[in-house]
Image 1: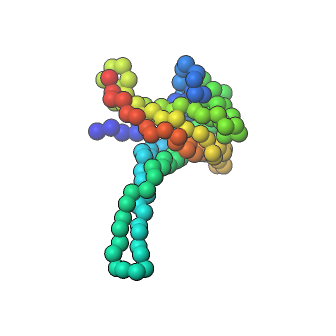
Image 2: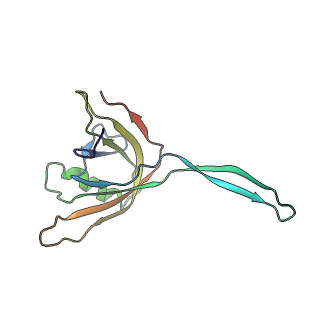
Image 3: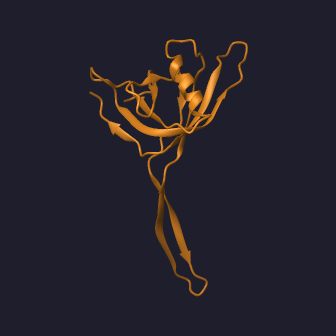
Length: 145
């Protein structure tokens, strides 16, 4: 069984050599893979319905993580925030905590950042950043090693 504990999200600007971690993850939404819409051809002249697959589309993914740009992993937070105000593409990597010694299962994809905000905070709560990643490539999965 794989749990979410110790799952990490790392990013880098496309073309950079090294991934940097983006905060301490609180939650990651569904990881979308390519999907297709269904196009329905429903003619008024008869009762037949024809269904065909439409074009591929990629979805988006919501993530929440502790906001602290001064932590050692703060560089990932800063790069994510900057990507939301530019057209730069990021490479992202989600790594699960099921390592067999070298690395856990990795889910890799490219994305843009259409939404980035810093959430509210309560007296005993943590300051959290809520970010939406819009996938621009289909995710690839690399098995744990």
